[in-house]
Length: 165
Image 1 (cartoon, rainbow, N blue to C red):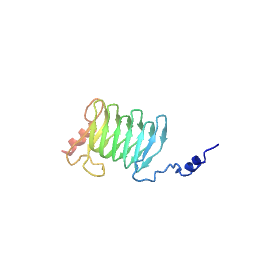
Image 2 (image 1 turned 180 degrees about the vertical axis):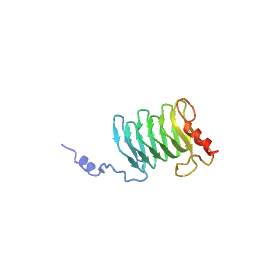
Image 3 (image 1 turned 45 degrees about the vertical axis):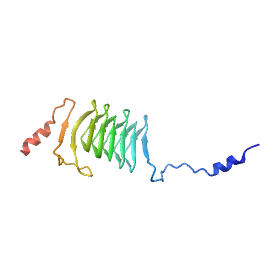
Image 4 (image 1 turned 90 degrees about the vertical axis):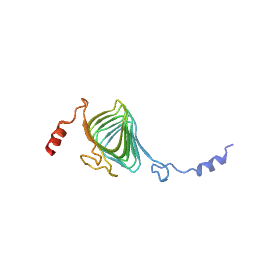
């Protein structure tokens, strides 16, 4: 009446685990839309944010923030792709992409920066050549800047530049 072969197949299934033990398989930590995480998230893999992180996001992989995503704190990552809102400092070792819907309120430190038309940056940006992103004022190529919605140069930076002359 009942098929006993089905029971044998079920015994061969591996249990689901929240830990990814296969190092060859990529892992992504997701903060879904409608979810708020308060505190610091640290990972050796990627973070995808469609909800809200009220704290820091630190990833040895990539941080991806969708248009509905928001980070109220600092971001530190190898790479980042931002379409949502960030209110804090962004430090990216390799490549940072700011999509047209991105809004950044804070300083940016990165090796490579790609900004789509429409993205807003209200803070300074610092192009770095180092493997690890540092807090240098200027990079070895001399690129440094600061912009606000009005597009004017940051007044405190102008004063600091005049004093150093």
